[in-house]
Length: 266
Image (tube, rainbow, N blue to C red; front, side, top):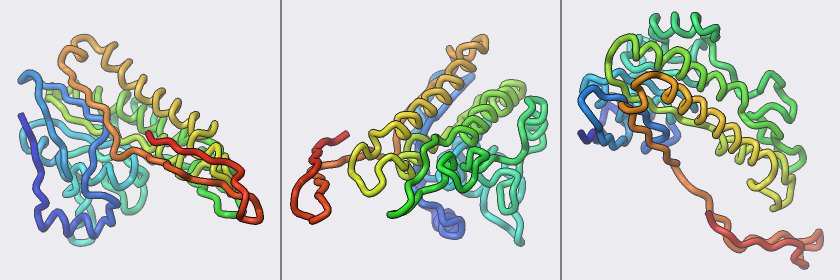
């Protein structure tokens, strides 16, 4: 099976209203199918097409890229957002303006001891360097902490509520898990105030990679520990972009002498 999503005018209008940062989006895809293996190619709004093909669908993670997996779910009508068929859990879950939760999934969250309101990126320490949302500026360094609490909530919501709920329903499913780390932490890291090095190779970014790895392991463990699920699950891991740093130089205070030079791409 191949699922493609054209850029329909009404979807583009909804994207503009939602101010989504990107049209193309693909992250971690989980596919469990009673019909055998599937190859699913996701473009904008891909989950809507999966849903129309009979799959249970969910998107969990970063605000914006998560919603555009089924953008219709976030389109307001008569001033309010209706309950969507696709489960959407992102930064706005449980908050004003967020996509409402399916009562069955809300019940699964409660039974798992999880909140119905998604945490923000502050790690419970707003306006400190433990606040992952703190980008800093030219005078104040950014965060020194990965996006721990929010991403743990997202991983728990997937493995303790959404996937168990889908398994109870007996339906095949397609899920997108969009990890903000390490990218979000790399953008906001405070290891290199007014310096090129260590840049995104510093300890905060390394911790963010470990955070994403831990979330991924949690998902893999759920699949492996659920009888029969691993044999019926296709898992895809990808990135929305890479990073290239070529020929950057750090100068001394006089702007003349080269202090550090680095040239690499990855």
